[in-house]
Amino acid sequence: MANQISKEEVQHVAELAKLEFNATDLDKFTKQFEDTIDLVNTLNEVDTEGVEPTFSVTDQVDRMREDVAVQANQKDALLKNAPDEEDGFIRVPAIIDESEEA
Amino acid sequence: MDFLNTSVRELHQKLVNKELTVTDLVKNTLKSIESTQNDLNAYIAVNQENALKKAAELDKNGVPENEIWAGIPVAVKDNIVTIDLPTTAASKILENFTSIYDATVVERLREHQAIIIGKANLDEFAMGGSTETSYFGTVKNPWDHTKVPGGSSGGSAATVSNGDVIGALGTDTGGSIRQPASFTGVVGVKPTYGRVSRYGAIAFGSSLDQIGPLTRNVRDNADLLNIIAGLDEHDMTSSDREVPDFASKIGEDIKGMKIALPKEYLGEGIDEDVKQVVLGAAEKFKALGATVEEVSLPHSKYGVAAYYIIGSSEASSNLQRFDGIRYGYRADDVKNLEDVYVKTRSEGFGDEVKRRIMLGTYSLSAGYFDAYFKKAAQVRTLLIQDFNRIFENYDLIIGPTAPTPAFKIGAEIDDPTTMYMNDLLTIPLNLAGLPAMSVPAGMADGMPVGLQIIAKSFDEVTMYQAGAAFEDNSDMKNQHPGKGND
Image 1 (cartoon, rainbow over the protein chains, first blue to last red):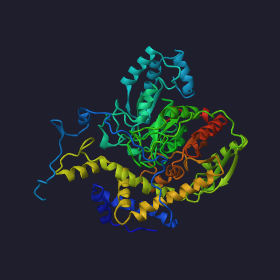
Image 2 (spheres, rainbow over the protein chains, first blue to last red):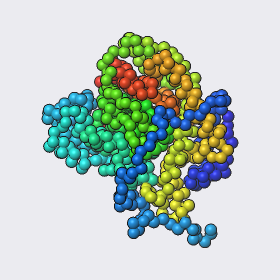
Image 3 (cartoon, rainbow over the protein chains, first blue to last red):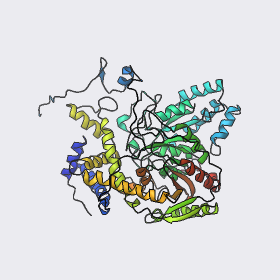
Image 4 (cartoon, chains in turn brown, yellow):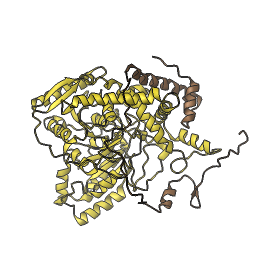
């Protein structure tokens, strides 16, 4: 069953996923996305009327533990992995768009 | 020195008796890794300095008799975090990341004084079936360097198969330990979901992921699982069930054992040579006194479709944390915060990861949740019911691990849906949470073929018992890849 997935739909999903594709990649991804959707649509052959969904297979019910910090004061180690830091803080670009076209 | 024909217990005895020093063992392992790294590309990082330091310490204090992994080098897949080496998940987005804590399995290896020798290469974020999606380059199959080692634990499988180390850890979300074990002729086990803590394994499909051991023989595998299994308060899905000695029934005969062989596992798409190897294995089990009967798993053919929806949906959610803010890669030349997210993720993730994030985001988005995610979760229930019905009457299920032997590098990488079908025989077990093993069973076209042995939840002991009985009666344990074969 061939699915009609438009480039616009793929573009929309990409926006939701915080991804962007150039024109060439968008063509390639749209084709591959269509193939994948065809594959997963085979599930429509299965009658699942009244079947409970399974979201987890663990035999474990929720466990509680004491709310205590076990590894504290690791700011320096954590900051080492930050792409940009200043004065013990993580630096990020301004949230408000300062560019002309916005 | 090559470790192709030794077991961890033999090596341990030599270390205890001081016939061999830990330092020599570690030096030889490092030398072996170094000499094959150019050809195989099995590692992303090697732990030379710390490994030698730990070795010297053990030589000074003596290797404890009751710790069989003490001083033994073990490779760890690079999506499992370690404090003394970077953890990249084979992605550009984590190229410079070093964890501030050890994964629970790594902590346990250290408690038992095993030596973390290096971080093994993998498919990016464990997404792939060939280890060709790694940002750090493709891993080669030691049996034939023009072929893939399988994936995603391809580096872990290749280094064990090559005889550099006798044990490695991998992760298995849809077959990522068992399929590369099959392609490289080693023993790979995905334990029952919950048996091993996932704390510190970079999450892909949280309801499917499980860490497990790759080794060259069944007993070593049980011995490695023995030290990593068990409850962990950091992982709410880890089970509080008692951990048995997984090797406790190895050596016992399997007379009277009831084994099921699903007809769907020998059906369409399964290579004829692979089928013959599995039928030969079934005969061997019969000769050892087990009964083998054909059964049916009617929903198994829908496993791949259900898996791609569930795995990708969970991945799209898990991978939201890679946003370029707190750690990892951040794109340059960005105008605002939204731009940081989009450019960082678009430049940082490879194509396969993007494909799965896209499918997952689509499946979970408004209007599609019931048609995709919920439907897949319902099919998952039906698959589990198929297995439950079989396990009412049988101890184990057997079948091929993968539909074909290892394929050529580049042969399937541009055809994602064909690549996805490679996991059709392993995926159902992740969906059901069952333990399964791939054990070398024969050769096809000059390449190893794995037999998959599937057990009831938390019944790894029976799986290891049958695997060892099969291995003892197979000549595969004497087959090794020729080194430098390209």
